[in-house]
Length: 362
Image (cartoon, rainbow, N blue to C red; front, side, top):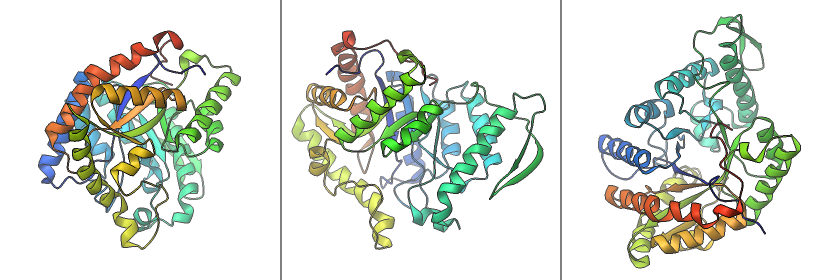
């Protein structure tokens, strides 16, 4: 089966910004220093999660954090994966999106979603049963507001279940037209038609074979809609990743750090005696066995990633270099080895096997 990798293959970082145990000022500075490194190393995207009232997310305001990223970087594209739209006033969010897009000179990526944790939604007074409806309505308003800035009247009117607006003046518009590229976390093939219709980049944490079903469906529906392969959005998946001179060192570091990350991931679920909607196994070795993490030398990591790319059909790999209590220098070393000895090899390894690089604004 033909692999879908080459110049079209994109590399990114996905970061929960989970509690490392460091003082917060030091924590934020180290993450921003890593963002600078990702920018310098040629990584395409830096995308972050949004979580509240949990050690899984120590940057609960993506706009605040990414305003700093905008100033500390020059070329990397960045943004939330995702803004939890059910928690936002959509007009306020539209204004923040426009500000970030201009502050970054058009590098903002716009991830959207409803929020996966019912407890986080509940702490903000949102009925989890209404989250999907709030998300859909909020998304519609944000898109209208971003479009209204380019309309003749530059105003927005909307009548919905949760929000009603009459001729609100729209004074800010995005730099990227018609809006920053959309990103969405996809869990099943049923979500593909919406993503294709909105030219949306997608990321899945499903098992490898299920990811392949979704990437095949996306490509088929993309072509059926009359779009060119060269315009294909990012079809991605995420991986925890530690690279070191030896497999033993990499795995020792990863096991300890993942134990802390997993405790943060489970924090609210354990507190509320419930099971999470997304599954991550309790140990690093189980995560590796499931194909969702890698630790080892650059050569071993790139071979395994190449096999997974062929199996899943993804054209974008999002890695977690910083998680749990990994020291800053360990995360930086992994990123540097990845950029120097993994990324170029993966691009060259299957360069004759795929179409040309897709545009970043999908």
